[in-house]
Structures are given as C-alpha cells and as structure tokens.
Length: 160
Image 1 (cartoon, rainbow, N blue to C red):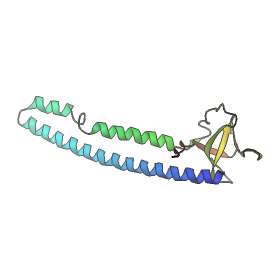
Image 2: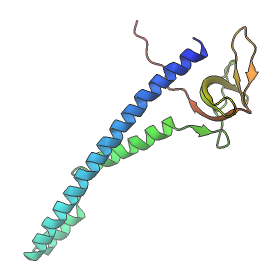
Image 3: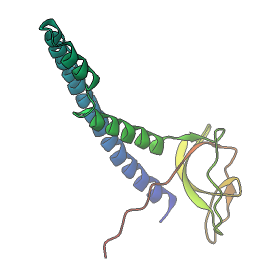
C-alpha cells in the first residue's frame, strides 16, 4: 500500500469519525435543550408548590433537578464528545511528539507538512525523526517540515 492509498483511506476514516462527532454534538444539543426545558418546568412547579405552602416539597424537588432524569445521558455524551475531539486533534510538534516505538521500523503517523509543501501524508516516526521511504527505497528526513501530527486510527478488521 503506497502513501497515497494510506492517506486516502485515512481521509475516509476521518470523515466517518467527523460525521459521528457531528451526530453526537447534535444529540448533545438536543438533550441539553430538553434538560433546560425540564429544569424550567420543575422549577415552575416547585414555585407553584411554594405558593401553596408546600415549601419542604419544593425544596426537595429543586435539590433533585436533573439528577435521576436525563442529565446523566447529557454528561455521558459530553464526555464522549470531548474524547472524540481529542482523538481527532492535530497535535503541534512543539506540544509533543509521538511516543517512542521500540520496533525496528518505527510507528506510522499522519502528518501535516508546512510551507512550501502544504500537504498531509503518512510517515514513519522513530527516534525523534519523521521520515518517508520504505524497504528498498531511500529514507528522507521530513522532521523540519512537519508542523502537526496525529496517530493513525486502528485499522479496520478484515473479514475472512
């Protein structure tokens, strides 16, 4: 598999993850609206109870808003959203580099090359160096051109 095929496959996988992320964000927004409306309704009901003299009941209702109803789903989606965003984030090389791999050929990562190349590619990273090339071809050190990187997603499972 050559670099162009790897990059195209990665773009396709990233597009799928971004689509799922958008779906999670939309569901997150819908749940937040429902929770906000629920809290308004319960607060209004608690106010009505207070006006009827049921202060203890109103206080108990206010203390339980969102705890057992829908808030856990909202916060679970919010946490998943944050995890997906971190997973899809381009990491500046000044922030950190990929972790050291103890294999002979290094880890392959997705990189963003800066000016004048301005492109995305899959490259090996080993011993603090980003490089291209493979078995039987010369390696080129691209470390000074790489501005950002991200780990490759897990490969798809192949059905036999």
